[in-house]
Length: 140
Image 1 (cartoon, rainbow, N blue to C red):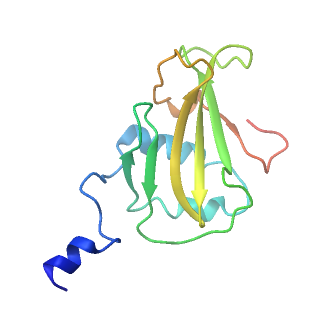
Image 2: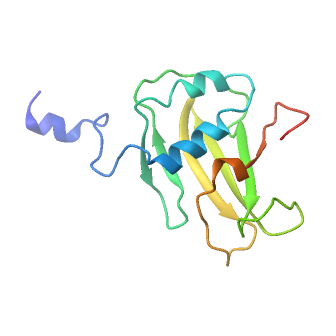
């Protein structure tokens, strides 16, 4: 392969791709601790995972290196909510949300947003995340 071919190779990692930091990895592991069809295979996609920021809100694009695809029925098979203030989860107050997006059977995006656009997004501690999946009737 010539240098020119390497520059146009769409599979090469962009220099902005990096390994997830410990906090990001902890959030992903907490989300993937949920049960549901295909989620176990999503866990297997974590080794070698790369991330890059998508926006100021902390959303991350995810790039799976091992390409172990899975079948999931939902584009967002697991999500979480947590208190913006860092206090106990209260479904009736302003909360923040984390959605794990899947595309073509691969981890694709970690999305963060808040109920109130004026609130600042922050990465939650795994133990403060209230997990939801479309697969479970008794969500955490």
